View 1 (cartoon, one colour):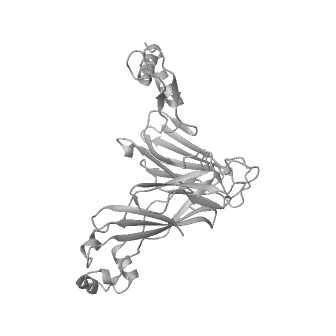
View 2: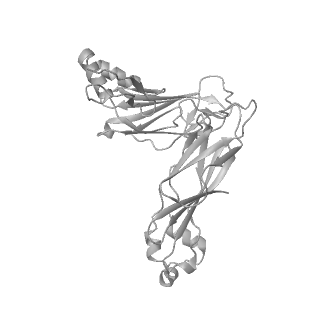
Length: 326
C-alpha cells in the first residue's frame, strides 16, 4: 500500500516526479501507477501520464521527444521575424511516421511561403517560420506540429505554439561567464536587458531571440604554419586560402531562443570541425584556433549582441572553447 506518496507533474519532459517515499519500499511514482493500474486499469494510467505533459503538448502512444523548439509555447515575436521551429522525436521505426506543420497567420520557408509543410520521418531539422510584417498582434498567430502515423493516419503527438507580439525590444545582452578557455561542451548564460519602468521583472519573458552564424576561420594558422611540400603543392599562399582549404563551410544548426522568467537565455556549444588533415600537415605541432562569429537578434535585422566563438584544438589533441563579445 502506498502510504505517503504525494506526486507532482513536471512540465519539463513530461515526467511524473515524486516528493516522498512509499511505505511499501517501491519508488512512490511506481507504487502510484501500480495501484492505479490495479484499481482502474491501463486507461487510467495512460490518462495520468498524458496529464503530466507540459502545456502545448498532446500525446497518445507515440514517439518520445528528443528536441522540440522553441521551448516556450507562448513565444512573443515581432512583425517580420523569422522563428526557427524544430521537432525531433525517437522511435524504433521512424519511417512509420511523418511530421505535419501547419500555421494560422504565418508562413513556412519564406515570408510568402506555404501554410502547411509535411516531412517524412521524425526529425525536421530547422523549419523557418515567418511572422508577417503587417501583423499587429491581433488575430491568431499559431503553429501546430502533428506527429502522424502513416499506416492508419492517427496523430501520435501534437505540439502547439501560440504567438504574442513583442511590446518592447531588448537592447542589451550580457554574458555571465567570462571569456576564458573552457572545456567542451560549454554552457553560457545571458541576461537580457535593460530594466524598464516600473522596474518589475521579468521585462522580456517569452520573447524570441534568433541566432545567426557566419563561417569558420582559422585564426592563428597561415601559410608559414603549413609544411612546405603540402603548402606548395596546394597553392596555399594566403591565410584565407589556408582556411578555405582545411575548413568546410559551417553547416551547424542555429535556432531560436526564448527568454525565461529570469530574463535569461542559455546557449551550449558542443561541436568542433574536423582538423585531422590540417594537424597532419602542420610544419610544427601547435594549438589551432577556429573562430565562428555569432549574432543574437531580437528586432529583425538588428543585432542585439555579437560574439566570437573560438574552438581551440590543443597540441595534445584536446579541445577547449572561448567566447567573447565583439
